[in-house]
Image 1: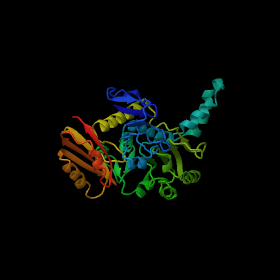
Image 2: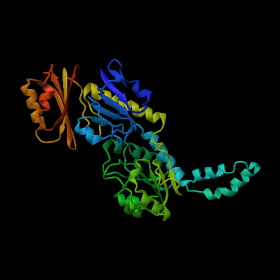
Image 3: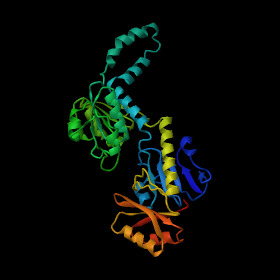
Length: 390
């Protein structure tokens, strides 16, 4: 029986996929095999005994101490693309509200309450204060062409915009899904200089914090409209506010309010609603549960942020999985331990990602009880598991 713990409210559409003959949910057991969460901050949380995997029902994993968990051999999953449509739709909304002063105009219209028959005349007289421009024919720059960026690009093309994309690390799948009308930016600098609108869709890490800074803002077309539905810290707020004051940036729309941005003219703060739709929450929960259970039951890894994707159909009686540091001669040492235990390898696969590697090894027959202990004696092996049965 696998014990699963949830740290946030998770959609029942996902949790109902659990086979309760194999899984117990949110029990009082000290041993926890897997955790499913959304935005719960795990950094100060004590690691439960037996924890093998964490599944984040969402794309970002900043709320999870990934490095710490990697060292402990805990696989961390996310759900890229599951909430992409939800975020895409709010990005498109951001394009419109950055162009048309709808929010400011709606707030002004509320002040006319009680004016009776005069409302119509007052609206016609005051509406000129809230004019804006169309997006058709304007140029949109998209920084980051993952699942969300590709969807935004394709829909913006359909809306009649000129779209320029920049992503030096674009995946093959993303490239296949991209409309032929999207132009590839020769460089980030050229994208910044030519676009009327810029939207950011890159992950937050040490190298991308304050990605939009004073230097990049200076490269932008004067009067650009900037959208950030990725992570707040990607934009240097001091440089942003200065650019707003100097009218270098006409408007900034973000899904990540902060105290220094609230109430500032031409900055529109949305209360982190990008993935806050029931459809997105359901899709993320379903993907998270499927990835977690597949890993626990078969050892297969898909959409992990700290270990490589590694999947193999089972074709032996027993499966051994090994997570290790990506250093030379690991496969040789692992094979030697198995040979000394007189185990016949039916099939195996090895994948690496950065400093770490992962192995799935199918064995004909059963394995000795001490096999994991022997494998973990190898310098560089982080964790091992034995999964019985076909």
